[in-house]
Length: 213
Image (cartoon, rainbow, N blue to C red; front, side, top):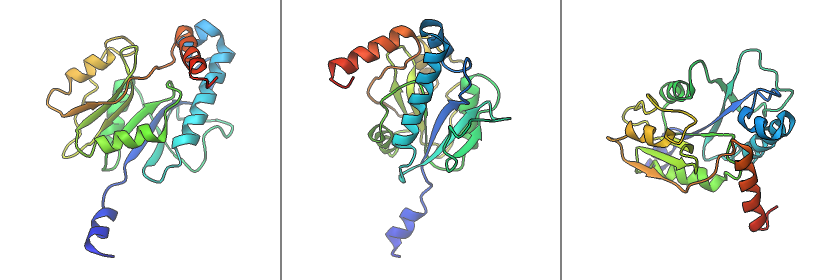
């Protein structure tokens, strides 16, 4: 092995974290369930997360971790692939949980996504990690004011960017960016999170227009 190969093999493995929930009916996609019903919302969640894991979770360019809530007493009936590592999200709001994982995971860049944005591909994740080669932070903006992806280089330190954020509002991304004023930030393409019945219908209409549904 030459010097260049030694240097490449010593680089920390990038980590993709999927923030997900144990698939319990009535406990997932509750906002969507209020519009379309508990069973359809549960089915949408299972289908979306399964596809995300299948499409991007096996890529050798990064290590995929499933950050699951609740973690204790986990009974998923084989829903999560057994070969993918699982870690607990822990307590607190979304910012507390993401911030804790960002600070505690082993060295290397980390990209986080949720199970709310169908159609995330390997190309999106690869672009995010490539961006972190130059930037300190990367965001995938959502049309509702949140974000479908967030990533941090985490070198030479791990910034805490998730404090004082109004989660699940139109201010979520802007609040988070207020914590990034000293960082080099890059944003990716805007996508839709599916949180409500209106979001779902808009997404289906877009797929129909593209001939994908």
